[in-house]
Length: 397
Image (cartoon, rainbow, N blue to C red; front, side, top):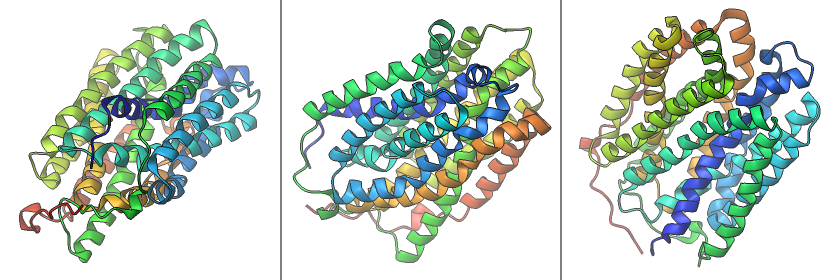
């Protein structure tokens, strides 16, 4: 299979950054939007964004199916133009229910990337772990950009421009992708390229169940932290740093540093067994979540940096397992099914975040995440040991 042009691989990585950026613009700007819409507290407006995260999960199954049966290039064009247009629609909203509907539409287009863009990128990769790690870095730089760019745009131009600027950029990148991405000679479903490791049916079913439950837990941690960190820093660093733009910059530094963990983990995945590496990262999350639950000021900032290093470091494992164990002809559909369950359930975090913080505070949320990390580690014991797996199957062409 011919390699993708570097320009197309770059655009696919940039698309991952944009995907995560769009999903976090609202959470970063929620205090300003809440004040404009007449809400006394940001926590009361936060549940209106849950539709975006529900559709980010639910929309993954049809997106993955269309990616395999219709074509990944075509679906990526739908992603670029759809998410850009829906961001402009969000910027035009003037009330909580209209913005809830527009964010839900944005989440529907955002659902396309993970089951379509990542399989398109790794279908040509000689070292899929490193490719996934770099792609994860790109995605989480989008998280960092959401914290930094949104904070500055909101402060200098208003919250609507925090959606308009990336929306227009996404549409322009869609035009570029249409010009550069080669047309597919056949849809992925017509290919016969085999998985790197052939699992027996029972082991594959068990692996799919474990990775779906582990992905749900990781998604809860990711959504609770990335949607709540801006407000956590504002609360715990009050009187240390009060300027919203500086806080946004500090949070962007956390995300940028944490994103580097995915490069390291991606390279380690190509060299180590997935089970041992994943288990180590989940166990290491437990004490750091407990420390962050109690810390204040710069100690909180240090603990949060460690937490996000490990939260981001856990992200590449699920895509790596799909690449290792699932044929390319059906990867988008398998990824779509997994994402529908895991992201659909983890989207509850966005709905619960505001009410839980209002009732119990951030300490309770971080303590619950420590328990969740410990439970995920226990779950990973059920992954198959790779030393006893069949030898890699040769790629059929």
